[in-house]
Length: 357
Ligand SMILES: [Zn+2]
Image (cartoon, rainbow, N blue to C red; front, side, top):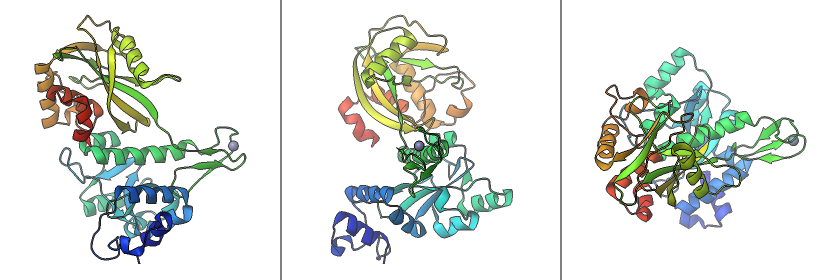
């Protein structure tokens, strides 16, 4: 019998009849969103339940922080490679200690991410050959996979890094012990419990009231030709709207009005929750903070449309830059792309969520 069944029954109080068709019981069946979330919650909280799912789990493999993905084409679906427990054990024997829980798939498979460390060249080549995939720089992978898979990669990387960086208690300095899912660490001395968290970032596309132009900015680290939205971390005691207003004032020296939240994205560098917003300001001269920015300008709809087309047809521009120096914007894996493209399409703010998710 499928191991999911008694766990789901126990957690949800469901009858066996309602669960017929779960993995292992014959034909593929889709589990509702609520059932998946509640099952995931159970796995995060109960070590025995989480460990019992490992043998039937699916594993996303990281070697030296590089995920195993197929990124031959841009923005393809199902670029992530999922291995069975048996397959992972061929390469790495320490699965329970180096695995973190990710999610539960629509057909009830528990999905994990495993860090296998440095593989020998021979083993790595064999694994890449067997799967038709390659261990890929995480930043590159994020720009090449689709929106949903980017979030899976982001979660995996953040939970692995969080476990690595919280090996000692923030209160007393004693070693901490992780739970099976990798979502909590308890101090061995004072009992203080820590959980992974994200740092909020406001990212904003500033437009004039007539929607004819937007402000895009260029940081020194951006590749040649790339401009993006204004962004910055929230300060302590600050609302998201206040973050956005402050960042615009700091970076380009103007005051915006009517900040409106649109949609968010998790980003693993270094574990941020990017909250995408629109804001308005009259077209005016920009007073650039030269410590933060290399350039900032108002761009027309025509210029931005062309920039969107360039990145859609060639997402590699994000890494290599545009040798011609012509404008491009972040690719579809980034929230900035969606803010910019929906501004071009004039999508009503309340409808953008449905286009992204
Ligand atoms: Zn402690």
